[in-house]
Length: 95
Image (cartoon, rainbow, N blue to C red; front, top):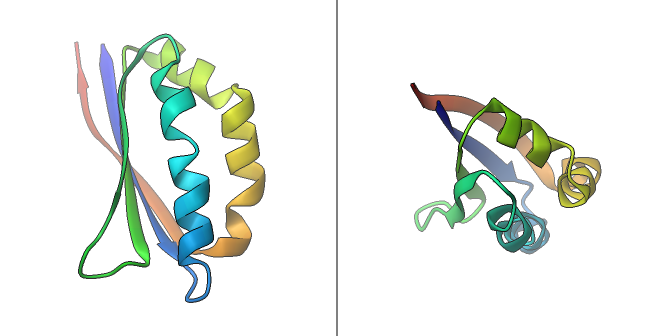
């Protein structure tokens, strides 16, 4: 079963570039993980403070492996000072 998630971040006014740096640093190592089918970061043109991460994982085990990775731990421990708001949803789970 694949898992696709969408995570939206709203950067603080003075933190857009730092938020972009933290989020884009996740792309290459995440795509290299076993079970990663898609991992991309998008920045909204009409609202540069708003970013969206779209990720698809082969299964729950692959997603759990991602959450246990070193790059995820770095992101998780450092994004909050630069973020006004974060929310996510699961787009689809296919069997």
